[in-house]
Length: 112
Length: 117
Picture 1 (cartoon, rainbow over the protein chains, first blue to last red):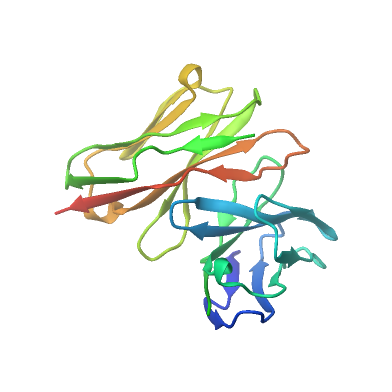
Picture 2: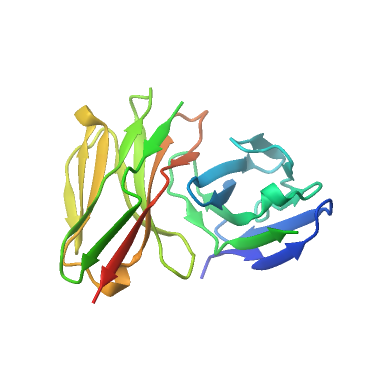
């Protein structure tokens, strides 16, 4: 069955380190998204991509970057992790501009 | 800019009671989509329902129903005869419909529902 996966599911890192969170989908969806979930804020959009080589900034993009080299993957990189980036990160994908987004299981990141 | 407000932060009910979750949204678009997602204690986000702005017909799907009122910018969600397994955080979300906007979602802050046996 087609699915969307994230790895690692849990990560502990130190302030200043570079961290990459993986997202992989097998639906062949064009659109992929990264959100972070914090208490009291719901989910907020970090970056998104509408296809290979396309990336766009979302509402809370500072300190994060993404790259899209193929349809299946959209890795999220924290260039220099900060304690404020401790959060739960969700990846999502959708088939087109008006399709429903389906979410991965999430990655819980702790920055010490 | 889009905004979604879920004024209820937490609702506690006894099993078999009905639960209604409020959602109020703001958008300048005339065409948009509204969603409800469920996040059970296990943490994943599960898609529940989707409604297009040009279709105000309210529907029922099993124990779920929703009331979309464009005039008041509200998209309320009801769980009938609640069960313990309905305990979760429920998110309302909004996306623009224009091709340029893609389908970026704006989420409300979520409502935690606790169903007690």
